[in-house]
Length: 483
Ligand SMILES: [Zn+2]
Image 1 (cartoon, helix red, strand yellow):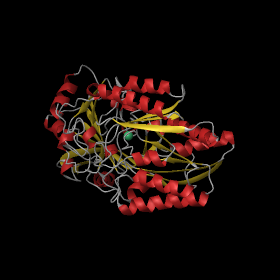
Image 2 (tube, protein in one colour; image 1 turned 135 degrees about the vertical axis):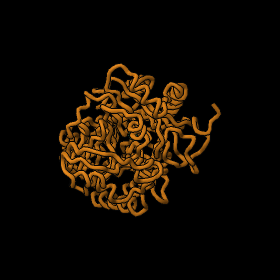
Image 3 (tube, protein in one colour; image 1 turned 45 degrees about the vertical axis):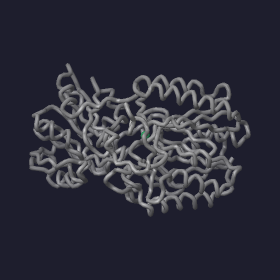
Image 4 (cartoon, helix red, strand yellow; image 1 turned 90 degrees about the horizontal axis):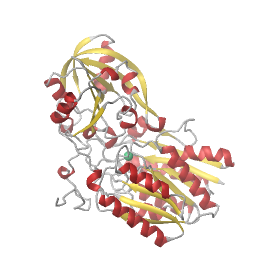
């Protein structure tokens, strides 16, 4: 069997302050055809799964481009079209193939393209024709459009949030696609739009139980695969929203019935799924009042994984103003401040202006007297599913009892080694503020005595009713919905 793999992925926050250009892909992960390293990256689940299965089963593998960018604002037309054409050229060169497996995101938006993945899959289908099996692995924060479903044979989204199951879902994808090539199965899809947008933290109920239940249904009674697209609220496109996708083996009415039933179940639990976000001072009050520590405070509104700059100072400012000490905060994306810290050197004490630089959503910069506690050139953090996350040059500052990790390549807090590689003793801290919505949880829950999801201002604001939607079909619970 001849198998083509490749990836093109980013999550687009159409309200984000910075465009996503080619440099954003090069910073995070760009590997031309045949040059992917000998380790899985976050966007290359299908490529890696095909390598693992291909070795066992003697497949003829052709690896196309893998490109993934840190989430940010709308992708430029130039970046999207350049990378799309590179991947499609790789595919044309690989023909004939039996199967195409792609690592996509599902919420990539570019100038002139509200549905990049639908556009890409349609072009892939045009190239390979109706008989070649086309599958893709998606992030559940996908818009999951009807065009994507129509132009592919199988789409499988990560089930876990934090997304720790990149490899597991990738292996399912290649196994089911291979079974389809061998005519052992005939997947038929049913998708139901839940007419809402919810966040599903699988670290707690009721999302945990729901995901466990759908996973237990797979592989039995003709049910091949079930995915939940949570959707991505910060992508203003017509198809934004939570959706349920079911594949059965040749039975369309079974797929429709099951998708509808599971969608109704999800709609019934939407209030319980909703995360409560106390404001900054209330979150700090709760953290200080907690008996013991550390308390992890998630600043999801400034999560670069959702397209924010990751340099906002709203929480830091209140911590400084309130005289809070014995705390850590990171990562703050501030390459200029990193440069200054490297020039000053370890142990230097100097006045520094940190954060608050990118847009009004970042707040005002903070002028702080800092000690440069540690410097780490080209630091790499452990990301989800143990994938490496390059952070560039990094510095640890101490500003009167608050230790701040500054990074050069924008990324969210995923592994605790973001702090510990710089010598920051997390276990001894009372409060740890992380720039992340939920991915931090996989690693930081191991050191946290308590976790608070704080509601601060930012580009990934949790107050969806304040976002200036133009294209999303509204009302869509809880946006513009009567409560
Ligand atoms: Zn996601």
